[in-house]
Image (cartoon, rainbow, N blue to C red):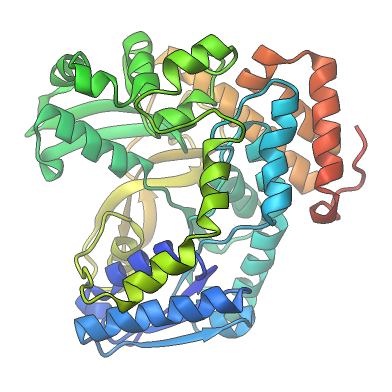
Length: 442
């Protein structure tokens, strides 16, 4: 049966290129239709050229189409992949620069804290519009969201629809590969249990052929070259006993320990991670620079001779193959509303847990109880995210304020009154995106 995969936000060129490559590695999908949709016509043209290059290099019988019409793109889709970015550079940079005025030094800002909350509030109504179109034209499609902030968006969508929507991130498998390298283990021979919330999960078990290899990791982090590579995460492991997902740059802003003073930023956040706490956040600096370089980089790839057709490490293609391809079960970590998947995390919040994809769908494979001290930290973050989700569901600016009021880094730096002023300023800056709110005054 010929399948159709629709990319919403296909102008995210690297994601689109890699995910299409992965899908076409499965025999069941090599004659599929790839439908690309984006509101940016220039990026959409480049995305189509990139897919055509992959199809040609693999001599696949697949076809590709592109459109700016979202409903048309979704018609008859079996799989939908969402990789959008809502809001231009000016409002996005305010996520970083307004908190900076109040002393909150944000590194990435796409997950939680002041920047993550407002990124979510801007994005939530757009993703809901996409899901409403899915409900109308392809209600049985498997929807995979890659857009951040993952946990808040998935929680919001799963509160508003019965569409099969799941959130995916590459931090778990990416970190596992790093750890395997540090310990001298082949990545495919490292098994693990990892659970928590998106970007703040922990490896509770690490095994090779059934044997615990955490002792080897403890030895590895004492090596100078390893210790310098991930200073924040290694410091967390030393004091918490378990290694977290996501990079040191991300993790430095999720807690109160690493970015509340200039000396701590200098010690943990300027060496070995590539995360520069200079005038702007690292990710903003990179994004602004990429605005001037992406076209040449992509054109160079288009005109180059070689195309790597080897499947990458992203989950999406394997999930589709398990559900409506050749049926091979696929184990991974997914973002779902907590239905006692983690016993000591608030029920109903979005958690990241081990699951399996089969022809019956996606299901949890084990119930996890976190070490109590980890549950304290993760519960705090999860409940803050739930507050932000409730703010979006109700259009309540007071809940936006409360979500940011209890953010660990923000509360370590600012007084309650300062946080109030900061959030009010951010609400006003985002007014054009928050028309679904009943008020923007707190």
